Length: 249
Image (cartoon, rainbow, N blue to C red; front, side, top):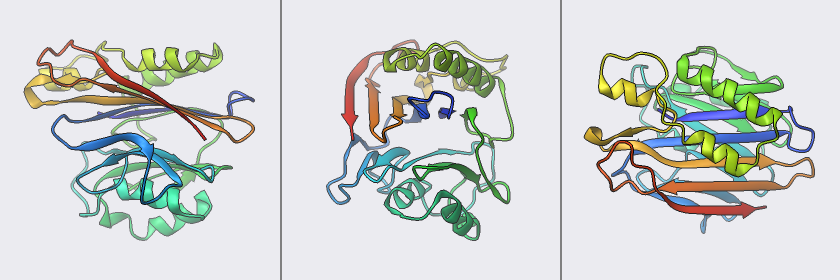
């Protein structure tokens, strides 16, 4: 279960802060965050199955990210990672992009989408009609619609609010993303593991592949931290950082 925590217009010096975990099957091939050779304006991780991304920024001041919607009937065949790529390459405002997306939501696999054009932060999904520009504050996006909540997103929102109020740096935010405490009571081991912020389900070869902390500064500069994890251990409590990369644009 992926998780994206956002602080929007809560800190004057960092109006947008993102802390996110990407959960995926260990066998799914992907590239770490970097400048894309074919689109050098994009800095993002890359899914090698479909060519899109789960989270990234662009040199023209844009940010985008997606999660899947876990308990939503399968929709279209287009990869939701294309939404991140297309938004980062676009010059449309957030509102214009989401309005045009509205008429073709059904062609994509179930998604939550978040996009920032340098001025406004917007949200859409394809389990509901409509889209919205987000108000200032802390927002938590999991694998459920934004207007829903569960123990995991509620706890993530609380912890992100605390982190922002104490002006936590990237190391503190990355540590927050590694919390392996379960949220709520679950009958089976799989959903128990998914309720944790840092996910590890050895029997399903699935878990948190990387954590990202992205900050937009008041002067327009970005800091992008990505921490990747070694996924070779069968121990569900295993957590080993394989790389920590930092980019500034």
